[in-house]
Image 1 (cartoon, one colour):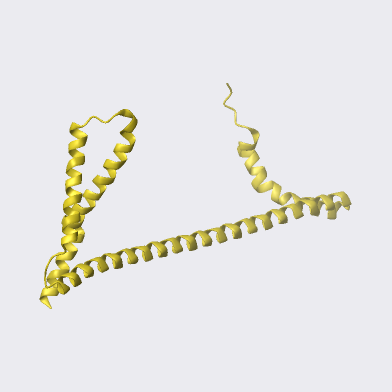
Image 2 (cartoon, helix red, strand yellow):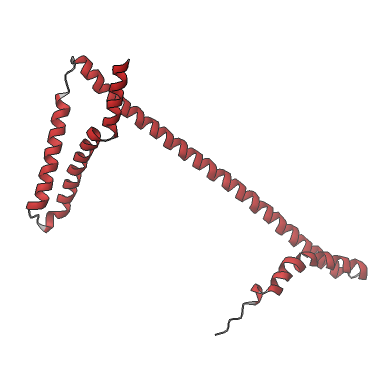
Length: 183
């Protein structure tokens, strides 16, 4: 097999394409003026028109790329703005949930919300039953996918309960209570 490059990839072809071809129209135009041969003038005009057209196309392509980058930047800015707004809404929602608990305790004279405690206990008991079922119960092959989806939903509930009471939401709640006590 030959390791020869195609002619268009050789140094001579690159030199001709980059250096000679752009000047060829001017050379043909000058040669037509000197010799008086009208055909050389026309060839020079055609080559120059092609060069000017290529320059126009290059300028339009460059302008298109600039506009494309501007639109991409604008879309990125809008996406980031949307993510920021979503984050603000999420934070406001968390704050409303904390304030709900505080207001409930104030209204009930310091008593805890029994419904929330009941939901937490039910969720954690369900999670324990799911773990036990996964270990001790044989699930028929026809029902495995459905069982796994149900188990996943229960485990998600249990994980969210655990994350609320032990995770950052609980820490934020404790911080809010400390700040409230300091006032």
